[in-house]
Length: 260
Image 1 (cartoon, rainbow, N blue to C red):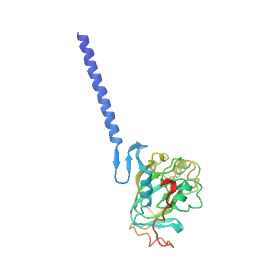
Image 2 (image 1 turned 90 degrees about the vertical axis):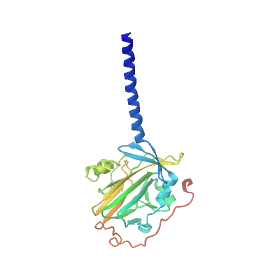
Image 3 (image 1 turned 30 degrees about the vertical axis):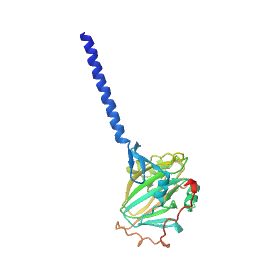
Image 4 (image 1 turned 45 degrees about the vertical axis):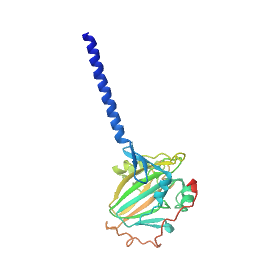
């Protein structure tokens, strides 16, 4: 009889331990996987290489990229965007070069030979920002068969095939950028969703920076662009940056491209 009670007590203890473990697992998963909606993005947040990535409706991604902020002055004639605020929202799309040219009626820089970034209707544009700018990056991969990321570095082109260790070796990528080096999967056009993530970067010192994709061969093929940081942090850029063209709005995209 005593041995029977020992077995019963052992069973109760084991059951309690297993239950506690299951509850802990469910609680952890619940805190890292949830549904989020802010009017633009239906996002499923996951822990992905130390930071979160989201799932963006492709149509909404295109709409976001077309909404040029009032402080962003787009110059299609020389493929430049001048920002006159120290708080910048930057929506960046990764795409196949031919698709970007057709969809946005834009011309890529001559060094481009493959996939590209699209920023407010321009392909791999030069970005001019004031010193001290806080840039809120929203990066979305609209490519249907390639992985991409969006990284800022001080190491200039040309880039080798394996660019990630190259820019790390020459001190052009700080610890913060290391968090955003994970490549996002291709978009799923059957379901109408694409993968993206958001992060914030501060560009305090005047100088020249570069944005690029670190997937092997992509930066080598021209998937990069220039960031020029000027001024003294007061947000005054246009008076210091001599652009010969008057600012214009978003150049538009042709209707019906890729089914949108």
